[in-house]
Image (cartoon, rainbow, N blue to C red; front, top):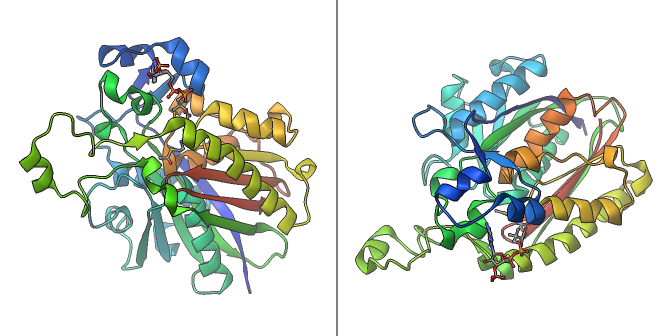
Amino acid sequence: MYNSKITGVGHYVPENIITNNDLKQWMDTNDEWIQERTGIKERRWIDPQSEDSTSIMGVKAAKIAIERAGLTKDDIDFIIFATLSPDMYFPGGGVRVQDYLGMPTIGALDIRNQCSGFIYAVSVADQFIKTGMYKNILVIGSENHSGGLERSTRGRNVTVIFGDGAGAVVMSRSSKKDIGILSTHLHSEGKHAKELSLIGPSTGRWVDTIIKENDPNDVSYYPYMNGQFVFKHAIVRFSEVITEGLQANNLTSEDIDLLIPHQANLRIAQFIQKKFGLSDDKVFNNIMKYGNTTAASIPIALSEAWEQRKINDGDIVVLAAFGSGFTWGSVIIKW
Ligand code: ACO
């Protein structure tokens, strides 16, 4: 058995900043409500005139991660792409990255696990590397939410939260024991699938049905979120899955050097921080700048934390996420 290690990190966010006050042109909302409930000050939304898309942003983040890993695109032997907002209904984003980066005909896998997508992707990559099947895997989380959000007061509880962006890591084979990904922990509870979902267009609600019914009150093609229900489950599952990861490695919360929670809501992160008794410097948050970027949130935060030298060799870094599905998970890393 080999070990797997994150050897390069990178991120890309569109230039176009949308502040809380900017949102007022579309909906009845205000800066105070958004900051108090979520911690968000601004988010990035793709400029529709720009070249950016989910896969293009993923490519931009990936190029940085590959370079920082000291590799070239030809060293990568597998791609894992996590998103809930692919450029096309099918195929997924992984093959687009393979094409845009001009890579050889390596395998490309898409992961559909929303906010937990990056955690699931890291776990899959970890297994492929540990068994010896692949040596260097490119793992990307990228989202283009802005085009699909309802820009009206009706959709405000969801629309104000989400932002666009991409993060990527390179995971590589390592022969050093006890360094790298120590363990990953994945869970789901599908009975709550509809509490945070986008129903149409899909095989459950095809475009021709939507057009035929032509119902102005049909919101099935906008994301739906039962916010308080999701919030209550999130704080429980975050705590459980972090504890599970620590226990699996005989660690306690005192061993955590940096916790990077999925950036869903600053209040959720603060609750977890308090629960585990972590000081401010041991929890990394950037939701204030980017909102919730779903599968991209953890790799963007990881890349920024690394750039700010908040992650050092030998550190215990904990990644954790909860979201639509419901799905949740954690990754325990010795950097
Ligand atoms: N601006 C102003 N007022 C608003 C807005 C807005 N953008 N949105 C809602 N309101 C109003 C509501 O209409 C309501 O008004 P009322 O009391 O007159 O009826 C009031 O504010 C309270 O609304 P709630 O929805 O109850 O507000 P809540 O405190 O629950 O906060 C939030 C909403 C921020 C969405 C919160 O529930 C939350 O963060 N939930 C968890 C999100 C999460 O973790 N998602 C998981 C990841 S996402 C993924 O997997 C894709």
